[in-house]
Image (cartoon, rainbow, N blue to C red):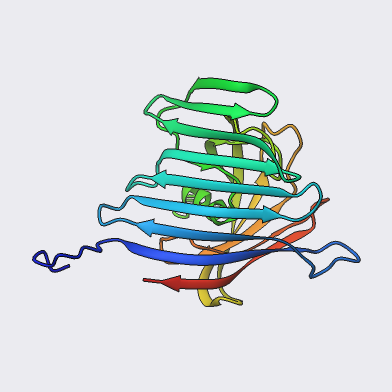
Length: 245
């Protein structure tokens, strides 16, 4: 960047769209939702994602998030707003410190709520239910160790609901991830060198999440490429649009 210029753009921007498709019998290939996201990576390594998520399956869910991380991919703060069936459900601000996580929320059922819970040191990852952020948890898998399932430690959610349709509030769980391997993946947004992982366990959830395969870019950015969930969910996610500047 020319420091003498009146203009300044030291950050990188990624803009994309993910579609949600059903894999269920009689609905295979049917679009059931979508997600639009913008990622900004700043010159100091900090990054922020803004995502708008829509699930069309009744009762329809709409969620907006703004999530910020530091240069080490550690969560800093997040804003989440949710509506279900075109009605307001909740809005909240989450903040993460060296020893705790906290939030200030307003929901349609609980009203104004303040939460603060201790964490095992600085929280390493936060699940706000944007599909684009699902791949960011995968950085916690240590590929220098022997291949096999690894527990990635503490994860806090904005909602324990599989669709992220409740709260938002703090909910602590953990997750176990397996690394399948390196692959070349083609999606509608292009062809990429990819890493293939599988979420194989989520201890702490009220209802166990079905196995969830996720493919992300193999460039250190962990950009979500595609995902497939089995079990009762039978859903598929794919990156269909991507631009960088």
